Image 1 (cartoon, each protein chain N blue to C red):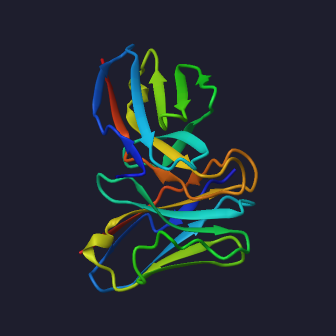
Image 2: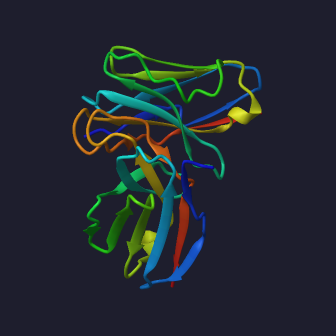
Length: 114
Length: 113
């Protein structure tokens, strides 16, 4: 079946602009996660959605970052007034409610802020 | 101190060698443990879960030492295709439900002819 998809695959923007990154999780997966991976760094948790529960936003680095998940499926991560340090690969993952907690990752969006 | 620490490597080994990676974690509430594999410029993919009793999947063996908060991955008879970055991952819940994963920065393995 179809895996997690993300768009765009690459995004180049100018400092100060807003960007929106999209994630389509695997159908039926109730949990959705956003992470980012900076060059030479490990994956850093950003935000987590589980069903209709309030999202866990504890990893968002600043109030310029926000995310929403509409209809329990597609999610959008928005970064306002982008800064050069926001340059990274933004990875989305989804997981089912049951099982061994495996998370299935999308291919990521590579964001470059000039 | 990072929550999950790994030797970044790179580990350069000849084909057929046995190689071991170690990982330590600081959160004693951690309950689930995994090794993920990440190829260059690709997304991470689950390699194997790590159980308290230790577990094996073909050439791969994972061990967990809760007392020392230490996880290991052993790769036997390494192949060129094993070249990748291996990510140690922990999470505080047991099964199901989902929760944020805490990743180590990864250990890079290069298998050479």
